[in-house]
Image 1: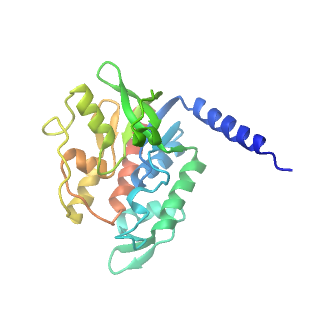
Image 2: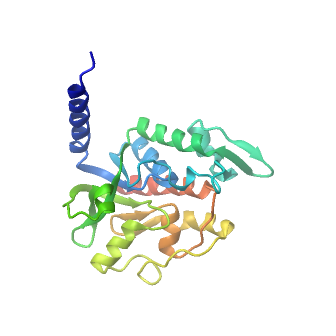
Image 3: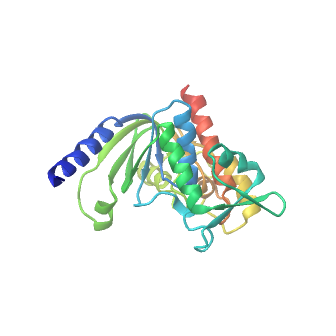
Length: 257
């Protein structure tokens, strides 16, 4: 006989257990798009305690929808090795281009990240940051539903040695820091430079170049990196996103280990 009380109790107890065991972590990744998930995979593989927070119900960010809801994406030769490592199917298309089913890409990356040891909490938004002595040392979280409803409900705190803004175009985490703390970022102006229009060739290169620490303890990856440092967007080619996720993981692993 199925008992609804047991089902409810199991969900509450196991979720609470998962949350309590991740109140102090090595890395908080904000955003479960391609760069955030890839970062989580390599961080967890490198032995760090990593949690991904995603404000939406689904993970995958812009990769889910491919290009204009045609659920295929493109990657270039340089990033194919990452997908090969994750056993995700790629198909060659003309010279040095590969197509990937976007659903396989998202689910494959997520599966590998979780199996490597990363934890993913969806439906949670980053409301604020914890800053101590000019360094980011944690994130302040709340339910996305609370944010959407405009309810006055106090948040909870997760302490982290490093935080990654992988929220994409909105750069939600960096903007919180800029607005609330009035700090100087590691950008030419000291502020968010803003995202430019489409130029895939430049954007792909700059995504990797701009993946770095933007303030002590706070790193940017993926489209967040370009939006922070004032570069272009690239549309449904995702090689730079994958390489950016791997690079930010390598930078943090080097820092913490």
